[in-house]
Amino acid sequence: MPLVDKNAYHDFALVYDEMMRGIDYPSWVDYVLSLYQSYASVEQSDTPLSLLDLACGTGSFITLMQAKGWVVTGVDQSSSMLAIAEKKLRESQAAFRLFEQDMRELFVGEKFPLITCLCDSLNYILSPLHLQKTLERVYDHLIPGGIFIADLNSPFKYHEILGDNTYSSAFENSAYIWSNYFAPESKLCRMEIDFFHRQQGELFRHFKEVHWQRLYEVREIEDLATKVGFREVRNFGAFTLNPYTPQDERIFYLFTR
Image (cartoon, rainbow, N blue to C red):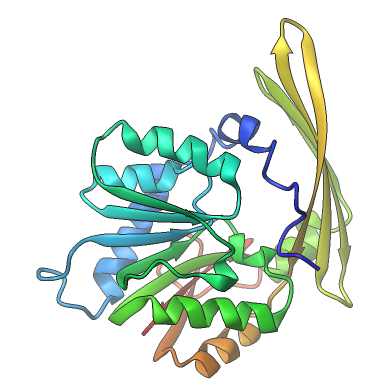
């Protein structure tokens, strides 16, 4: 089974930023930077501020990191997403790099003090073996003492929020109907999404994408990190410095090389 459906996130790029407008990206930036400053064991005063962001999407997060003085590199599997990210990043005229890659096969020829993978993107990796392969590639791209920050959807979210539920929402120029089908025995969640994108006036174009995600237990993540060689892995409830609780919908992990 592929990392994502071959067409997933292709046309989604057309409506992604409008649908994600409610995400407080500045707060995500502040949180990531607070974790970096607290837990990275590199000489921060002497280490260049360079960031590698996996599954960077349309670049909203790395554009804000760029504005904070970081030299950013983004990786994503969707050329449509990367095209939008490039337009945003070019506005500052600062240096950046973008790569169209599957993160299981990550190679950008550089090591970083900080690597991120946000918005439950690791949940799109559908087997522990492939997740281990991704973590190995991340490990190889970190400098000693560098950290990898990633958030995943929690078991609670798959069982109680996504489950077999359907959600819908409408925006000024787009709308979606999002249907979830979660299989606890395989830990896989199939997401069938009907999108509607305004073309002209009241004329909307309809397109459909199928996404797959996998639930990972905390112990699975910790065991894989140990196999790869990370010195330490911590978990936090979203946007806190406290260990996650069973009712948290999102878990942040911090891996230290």
